[in-house]
Image: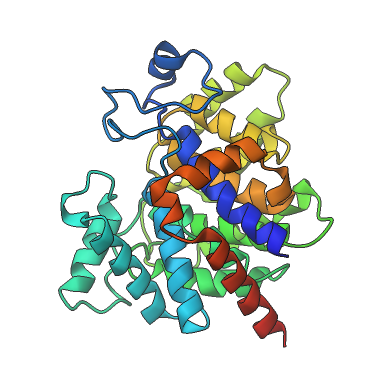
Amino acid sequence: MLNKILGCLYGQALGDAFAMPAQVHPDDTERSFGWLDSWQDAPDDHIVHAGLPAGRITDDSEQAFSIAAAVIDAGGVTLDAVVRGLVAWYDRVGGDDSPYVGPSTRRGINALKAGGDPRRTGAWGDTNGAPMRIAPVGTLHPGDIAGAMADTVTVCMPTHFTSPAVSGACAVSAAVAKAMVDGVSLDAVIEAGLEGADLGKAYGRAWFGCSVTFKIEQALAIADSDRDDKTRLRRIFDEVGATLNVPETVGAAFGLLAMAGGDPKRTAILAANLSGDADTIGAIACAMAGTYAGFDAIPAEDVAVLDKDEVFRAYDVHGIATGLEALVHRSAD
């Protein structure tokens, strides 16, 4: 169990940090790096990550880790714990002045800090912050999709409580929950994600957005085609999408997971070369891959790169992993 939880957390960071330098368009990524398959600093002209060194995690992993730590301190997922985790992260990074904070997260947290009701502050949140930070919650419910979804709804509420956001987050947490089962197939993990997306759309404020389920299926069909990686990635970018839109983000993440056969490092490379919101898509896809394949499947040299990053080290990921494992055992008892 600990191997899978560590795989989730390190996978999240791997996809996030490895894809962090990718440009917003694949043509620009190719001009900057060729085929991006090694750790790189962010280009000086990057519109968000300029100045970040190779191996640096971003808000995708930081929010996931901060919420997980707050949940551990609370002894389980509660609305108060989620709010504490989010606000602690926001204050830690100077969220008001940070270029990395997404629009829904900023709006929701500022409303929370102004005294807003956390059951209402997420009513306008429709971007991809919910699925990008939910994976550790899925590890608390091995094989239990309903349990993972219930906690996911709580985590979404303060900043991303719209139907597309909850659907996308439930797809990820359900897939991670299924991936926690020993010997599970990748097909079963993906099917759990589709189930989570379909069931999750019933929660949150009804909002604009195409079907998360459809976008996952669209990306899976592209991943299953007999074209080369570059062609399939370009089709996912052009047809599924790679923006902050939740169905695009989650659909693309499942497509990359399938293309890579659940291998965490290959998933990270594909995310980097997809481009767009590559760090978020990579964080989601690699968190699922890391849970499925386990920590031992992540190359030691890549683990070493992450362990050297000062931001990653500040979150005591091994401590978070053991804390999540203890919560799983406690709920089983």
